[in-house]
Length: 81
Image (cartoon, rainbow, N blue to C red):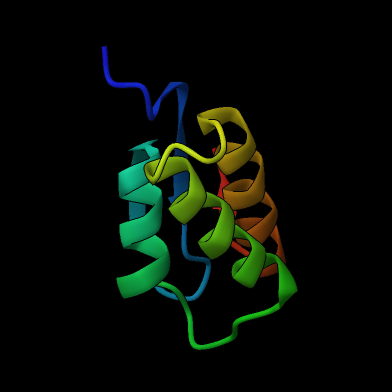
């Protein structure tokens, strides 16, 4: 089993574009943060970047990364399903 996989995937919808994506792992979350995030980057985004990177390096857990990613998504006004 993938140690960075989440038990419950997160489905995000960008309210401006209607584009949705499903994030199932810390690696996918990091990719979304790095490549597909809106131009607005607040404090929760920075924290999610750090925590997801730490989880990929084994310095934190996937649950903490998931929480940080959700907080960043809320801050960026994504709809979470």
